[in-house]
Length: 418
Image (cartoon, rainbow, N blue to C red):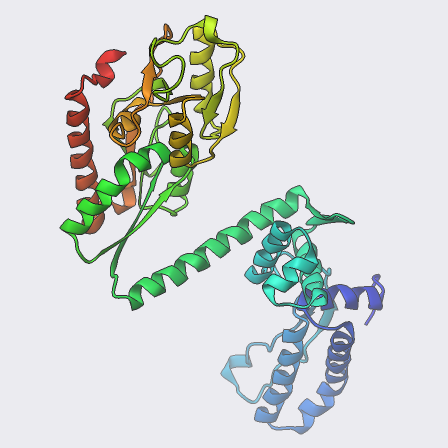
């Protein structure tokens, strides 16, 4: 066979794509060459069935190096005459990487995600129970398929490239799907046929989810629940990705993403809070004169919501406000620290006031204009016909209305305060 590409280089590239050794690939090429040379004489001397067996041998060779070689297939029989056997396969070289000739192995994407997560091929091989040469080979194959480097090596480990991070994200998504499938299987074995996943922000979850779970299980004893608290700006993205069935969270969007519906549960706004033992608790007011020496807590959002918090503090005149502790996504830790009386925190008012029996924090008045932080129920429109989710949605709306009435009983006016 003639080609402008050297045989060893081409064999090596094709072997990488096929996941076999170059010597195995070359043996397959030789076998097809031999078949093509001998086929005309063989076809003249054998019956129709024997001729078809010769063609099948060629097809087996083609399957081995299909991403490297293009082998002609049996022709249509002339006028339906079965005595006319298939034409001799013609062999031609194609380029070593063909986007239509293969598909990425999902296992390789998962392995890439593990390598980048662990920081080295050695540690990843231990987690994946693969040898280092096998893992290295798989990554080289994936690089050839992707058309670029996936990570850079150094004595400190591996560092992802933009392309590698893009593919690793897909690998992590596959891992999540596998974990979801295992969890669904486990629930099925335990007899939990109906399962609902609810996501919530940390403060809102601490105030609402325990009561919501209790009520849902009273109404639907065979219901299984997964409750997850996460940073509020991630919840809607997770809902779109199918990680939740419902989400309870505020919004920074003018309108919800396509296919997502939202309903306002509580008209809320931000407030500044401190513990009852804080020096400002007795005065009950925060001014620009208090700027120096204030210590702040935050949930570590690093999200679009930060803009409202910063603008509120700047309007008060607290330009030097800086978070000393970030209790990232953990409302209980933040509230316990707040109760110690050494810090301040900007938090949504309604959830904090609902927990006043457990955490009697003090709200400080300011001269800043109110910053809204309404709380919404987010759902996927495609699931609105699901009777189980419809019942859960009604329960969430009813519980939220009860909690608003409870707040109004202690003077909370919500939207009227703006």
